[in-house]
Amino acid sequence: MQSLITKETIRHLAKLARLELTTAEEEKILADLSKILAYFEELRALDTSAVVPMTGGTHLKDAFRDDEPLETNRGEGVDIFPESESGLLKIPPVFEP
Amino acid sequence: MTENLTIKKFHDGLAKKKFSAIEVAKDYFSRIKSADGKLGAYLSLNEERALADAEALDFAIGEGENIGLLAGVPLAVKDNILIKGLPATAASKILEYYRASYDAEVVRKLRNEHAIFIGKTNMDEFAMGASTENSAFKIARNPHDHTRVPGGSSGGSAAAVAADLAIAALGSDTGGSIRQPASFCGVVGLKPTYGAVSRSGLIAMASSMDQIGPITKTVEDAAILFRAITGKDRLDATSAETEFEDFENTSPETLRALTIGLPGEYFAGGLSKEVSSEIERVIEKFKALKFMFKKISLPHAKYAIPCYYLSMPAEVSSNLARFEGIRYGRNENLKSQTSPNGHSSGRISNLQEIYFKQRGAGFGPEVKRRIILGTFVLSSGYYDAYYEKAQRARMLIKQDFDEAFADVDVILSPVAPTTAFKIGEKIDDPLAMYLSDVFTGSVNLAGLPAISIPTKPSSALATKELPVGFQLIGKHFREADILGLGKLYERTFL
Image 1: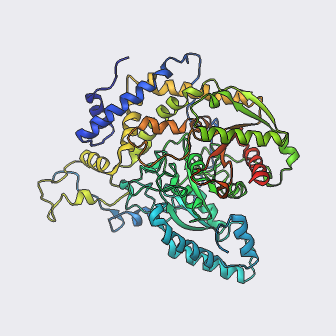
Image 2: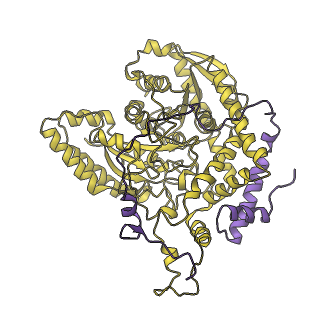
């Protein structure tokens, strides 16, 4: 089976994942992923048509709890943030003035 | 007197006033300072607070207060587990300046027991790896041979315990990350049943498989630590309350009634000579104790690695989306591109650009590889063929165990196919590194408990001989069986 992944695929995926990659990184990931996916081909031959997918690690269902207010650490997220001013988080400007 | 302490020995010494908590804590810090430069087990230390906690405990003991088994025990904590006010980098640049704003539930529980946290340990970045070479800050070395890896991803915790730079430690295990380093370093590592320990405050890698567990010098210590951290937590909806038996006092007769299964697929080849002969010896020892063995089959075992390495990256790509480079760290990269008046030509003008730049600069190669792979298997057109396929295979792997456990109580197997490999040996070949998880990953896919126990004590290793661990896999929430059996082995043969 031919490789599913091209450099364009990697670029598209990196864009979806909001990940800046250098050209060298693109090439390395392309080579690695092609190898990894080829190794995984064995799995595609396994007949799973009658199997229900196992999603998640638990069989617990509807794990509800009472909706009661708890003591929280409100404000501590601000204290721990690298820069803040009057209880507000300071982040770089993201809009054109 | 304060060397090679186990939790049990430390507690006895403290209770009999052979030493104080602060003496022992100070000894550990001085050992860390002389040995860890070379070993690289720790990423940060918590000396000031640890010594203050030890002093407060000594004062309470002086006042006649009764203390629990874990009081004053110097513990190391993997750096993806939050301790309020301390760094929690997960060995990633993107979290280099982050400080935890709350305690993980396991830390809260241990704090209530007056355990002492001496530092945060090195690991593969975001727990992705089997050698600790993926740490963004430094590599860690195997205490038995400094040219070799300690395993991973909890390599720092295992190395710290093996080198006696902590009495015990916490690690996390998503596909073998507690058990494999425990095997490589000659210590005990327990991966609890999925849901037995709260994941609140554990930096998520693959949420359907992650579990926190103990890395210790003895099985008895693993049982003590496990008992302290297990239980339902309202902040982790997948955690469960279970009644654990008093496995510390399970009689040998009760234990001997357990049937041990040997999965043919795990012994079918691919094991190194050292590992295979050590595991055979362990089987002989259990047979000498008149344990009943049964051959079992896990027919889908060969799909475990593909299944794991398709499922896990999908969860990774989702979980790591939260690291956008703003909320959890100093915005240094971004600030430097803006002049004081904010009118630099290199100025970042939109939010997406921040994400791309921060994530591109903040994540290491293995993390990027898994994010891309995970994004691929979840992307339109490939979801059914890869992600969903893997989830169906996961069900088959779990059903293999269900069927096996209808016949046997415990499964015995190797932990890893080899002993500790050389630093640099596998780092450029991700697939070779992934195969380190061949006997451990399926346990996480099925959500089962498993323990790695050294086949022999480190003191009995010949020159140049490296430690080997054997694995006992139990039924869901039957930690009592594997801990009890492990303790029997330890008492009889170690």
